[in-house]
Structure formats: C-alpha cells, structure tokens
Image 1: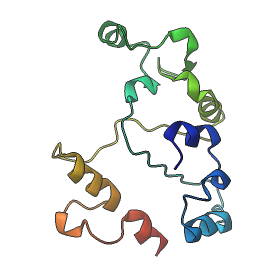
Image 2: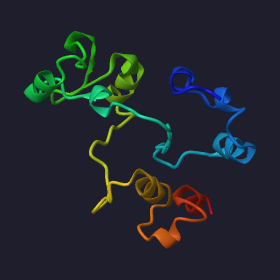
Image 3: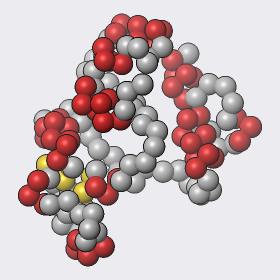
Image 4: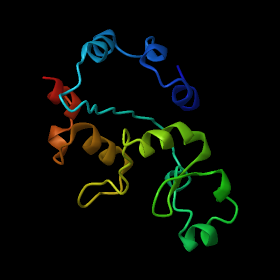
Length: 145
C-alpha cells in the first residue's frame, strides 16, 4: 500500500491502479468534465495531518509565538495571499492555486461536532447526521447513483 508521502509525490491515477477498485478507476478515466471544466477531486488520507503546517498562517503573530519548535521558515513557504502559505513540499499545488485551478477551503466542518473521531468520520463519509444513516452508501456513492 502506498504511503501518504508516496501518494502525494506520484499523484496520478495510474500510480493508484493497484489500490483503486477497477470500477472506480474506469469511471475516473471515462468521466468527461462539465462544460465549465471543473472537476471535484476527493482525496482521503487516513492518519494525522498538521493542518497549521500544511496551510501556514505565517503572518499571524500567534503562529510564530506558539510554534517555536514546529514553525516552518517563512522564506521556504509557497506564499499565497493574505499572509497564508503552503508547506514547501506543496509548491506544485501553489502553482495551481495561482492559476485558479485549485482552491483551498479552510475551516470546513459541520454543526455541533461531537468531538468523537469515529462519529465525525461517519458524518463526513455519509454526509448524514443521524447515526442510523451511517450504514450503506456514502455521499460519493449516492452521487454516483
């Protein structure tokens, strides 16, 4: 199985062929973008991610104050706008943002989170709040139907 680092480094469907179910790989190759050419790409990476050192609020004085050991050097970041930059390993993503081909949406959540990892993952996977609806197809499956 690919590590997260390997996946991000390769980031091509072909490299995922052994781990992607055949029907999903076929659907991805056969899909024609909408008239406006936009495509939604969903990547789920299990495990931890330090979001503050992925999309870095380098201009916020609290970042430097509270991240003395973990903060990233500002000169190595891929700077976006409004005092925010991307981790230096995401320089290609920065180019996509600059060209308008990628948007980063921060602070995404849902109302009244329970602080339970398992419950939150079920809500995200199914796009349903009711625990009785956390079985069966998730939102992507329903969308494909």
